[in-house]
Length: 147
Image (cartoon, rainbow, N blue to C red; front, side):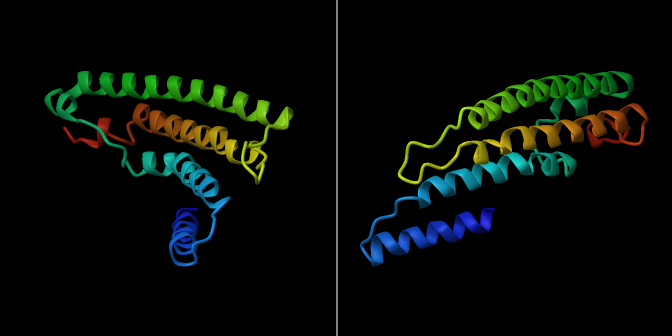
């Protein structure tokens, strides 16, 4: 998706500045592709522990307190992601059931790009639950820190 967005951006620049033409649909598609890639990429980044975090407090804490903080953090993440999944699904379903289209010339059916909301948050929720189970079964250490 990212490569498609980069290609479309280059094509859009070429058409605008070299051919002096109009780009009607490219910007909309690039935005949809980048948002979809970001949302669908969330669980992979979570799996790789690639999200930005500040581990000052986990580094200071030890043992059970660090474990409790990890449980609290993952629990809150699961709750927030479940809420986002619920409302993302609701938003996607409204777009699908009511036949929403974009306000541009291409009139893209909005359920297509909005599908990345429940899909991305659903996969992220599954990854967070897997992380939570790994933490509780002690196959993962809290925050990936030893000691």
